[in-house]
Length: 124
Image (tube, rainbow, N blue to C red; front, side, top):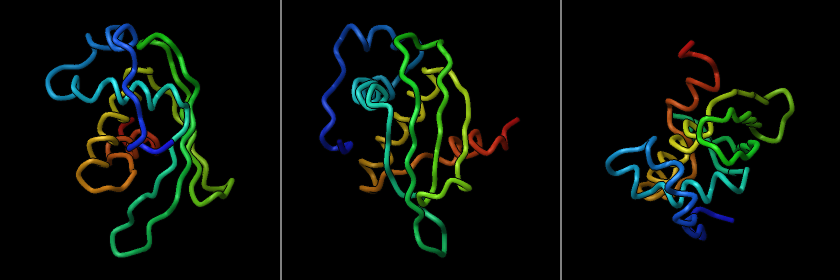
């Protein structure tokens, strides 16, 4: 299912995550939870001065925002271009909010630089 086809999560599901988000992010939270519950996202990593690289991100789905989620990302369908990172479910939902907002601006599905810094452990 594409981002355009997402249906908002239920109010009950949104309420569980609301304390973790403020401001404009709360407006996108219902769609981000719906995307999170799918456990998969396909997109294209934009490379400056080069061709975009397709990716598939997958993660285990949990019902609690503080639970740890293992996120796996594979680029270009190649096993040697696979990465994995652990984060709280609420942190992944936050990255998905940013991804949805980016999609609305650019019509491309890609994570933010912050997500890639975490995935490649540049922030540790």
